Length: 308
Image: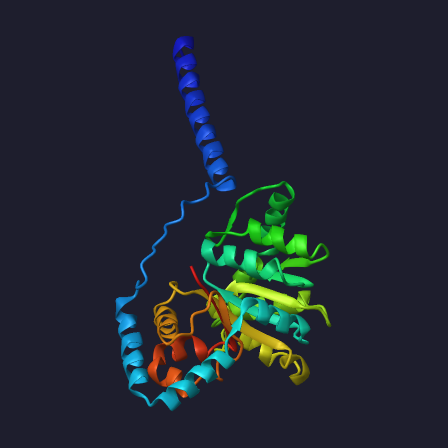
């Protein structure tokens, strides 16, 4: 073969290799050093018009009540709400051992938890929705001073940094279903949460305070989900020391937005607040906000609502 043709072929092949190498490095860089997304802010008071009608109708019914009944409802509502500071203080003094904290994977939620919860609360064990391998990489990035890196689409670095600063001896585990477990479940129904529960118990430390930060559904009391599995797998004594809570922004959920609007309009306007016992609210709330009751109040023991 002509030597000039060989050189041309090698040069072309080498060029392709360089392009592939460049693209591979470029893709790795974008994956390893993702840009912090620009926050899309929506300042509209009403972002769920359909659910807002529920708030308007409830407000109309409330205003038609005799003043004595309105006062009773307001007082009972206020008695069952806490500020974040009050709730954290109460939780700190309680004997809980497992707190399943359900979240929507959004930066606003992680920022709120970092600033308002993990900066003020002492914990022993933090368990995340990541595999051990993924967690190891996250911790390496944290130790390397990384300012931003997402877990499930939202930044986790600030939250981890805050938790470690507040609790230098905190133990952090990734208890997500591993790839090996995924391969071995053979199509079992909801096997993922069964494996997550198994991974939790492998990391469980008797007498310690555990915070499980997972997607909202995993922390419901619905059958086959993580929190329900944990409750079924433990003793009555430990079950009494378990809490499931949903953390949600006032505009992250339509029924929540409608509920907050109603509270504001009847003179109960708080910043971030907590409903420690979701079954202790006035009956009017369950009757007039059925979606809120069905989706949230009936599935979590406590509810944290943060305001924006």
